[in-house]
Image 1 (tube, rainbow over the protein chains, first blue to last red):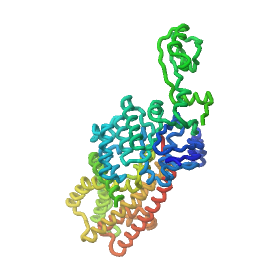
Image 2 (cartoon, one colour):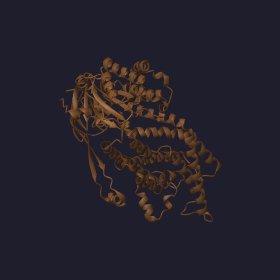
Image 3 (cartoon, rainbow over the protein chains, first blue to last red):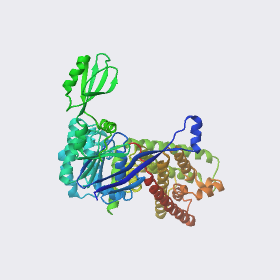
Image 4 (cartoon, one colour):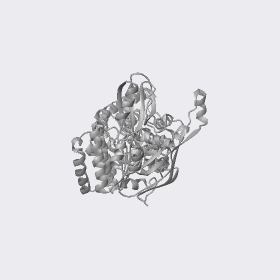
Length: 328
Length: 267
């Protein structure tokens, strides 16, 4: 039994179907049809205390829905969830005391209050002792430089500052488990790095179990040994990061803008997309170097501009489909 | 005890927050005064050339309107219906549900903070001046004051429970314009906020008597101007107490259903 256990978890939403036209609108007053949308389907995993797990997948894959069920604000349609021995939606308030949550897209702080007052309010909310509060505030302030914006109302903080405030707020009550939903979204390189360092420190020094959803592969590479990959509500992969990286991390995409539209014949690379003069070529960097590929292309056509891309999670997932990888 | 401290902290923070939006308090007070004059003149016109109507003098009627506007000014500082709708629509309700407290209680205590600020800085000064300037009826004994205050608090809690219950329907409907209209219509007619129930036709008065709304403004207003005394007063306040219990039980039931029902929008 892990600190988090998820067994055959499913969540369906019912969405009212919009009927077309005026007549449809009138009809829908009396009779409504619903479409069932499955956000999470038969998901199972177990996470041990102290682990840091990347929970990833493309937009709409069901990541946030899973997190919401783990925090107790959504009720599962089927299956079981236990977090620290509790069933989250049944004992929501009790569960709230053992978890910390950060949503990158949404602040949990009170908009109108100066940042420091939000912290003081949380101190009361979680009945945090003076000593514990002091200790945590000192640590967080030192790493996250919260003192730069103590007196600023939350609504006036920059995104980077707000995220720093939010993650500090989520850890004030020393939760055993931390849920991070896209904690680095929209942050600049420096802020991202600071955030990652902080998360890592909290995991290593305090032994906090972390579940992290992200679109940024660098977050995962930097922080997680294990990742759970989901798409269309189903677990596609659960395991070490290295396996995925070995398999897919070597692929690169070369994007070239040619002077005029030309049929390219290249060896060791695959034309995956073509829009007029712009071509996308995927290649494996162990089989061919970028330089060799560019040389091949430049023989056939004049290159006006080019760029190299590392694969993003979305494209890794797409690739997994194409190549039919189903590593258990 | 620790729980109470937690909720009181929300009152304190709401009080501070109100102070940051002083202009809001002044504009609300301004519209409150406009309505006060409007209703004052309407009743003045209706009473012109008449002495007592239904045994109520113009002086009593005017006092009724003034105290009613005062209570409405207090009530206006907290709007649980709008707040819950906004939170459900934006999905911020998720944040509230992830906290180790009870949302309806915390929201009530936040409103206490808003009301305290609004009452102390705007409503109280204005109405002290009004009652001093005009020849209006005020309670003549300490016990009448105490009964009025108690009844006003009961009335506030009834409105809070009913209004939040209506607001919670957002969880099922998402668009609640119609529900809002029903609530605001019912409260403006049946609560006696502008027309005292004693002017209602008999059948409407009977209907109003069996609804929770009359306990919100009509009962405290009537106690204030001395229209409700003795046995009838005791009965009316007992009725308020019963309605508070009933509306609170309904609120808790709807809330527990809503909490299970929750579908967070977006995010």
